Image (cartoon, rainbow, N blue to C red; front, top):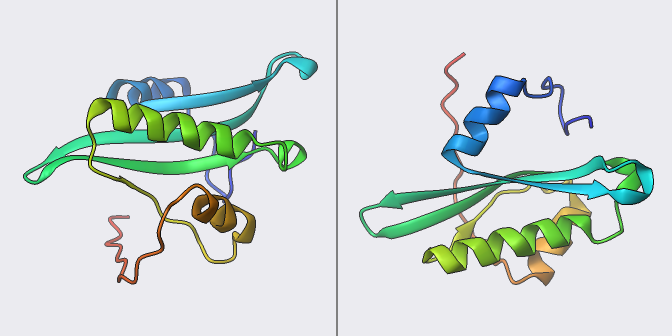
Length: 122
């Protein structure tokens, strides 16, 4: 399944690391030989003010969009975070991903006015 940007798909070792340090949710399509049609990564981490949760890389295959896969993956991650005791679930989504932004707002995510920064190491 291609990613949303030009990044190469993760290697087996990288997938093992993702699973070791976080939670990888995978959606499969039984009608197409159990092909992977969606993924989501949830990270739970402790900070001084409590347990935090972050969703990253919600990716649904182009041909599988509009079937509720992104919603199902996101709901599962939210429930996992809730059960684990996280105070909130954070995520970011580029404004041009209009359908994804509508989904997150429909699920109850609130858009925050904030500055997001990145410090590139490579």
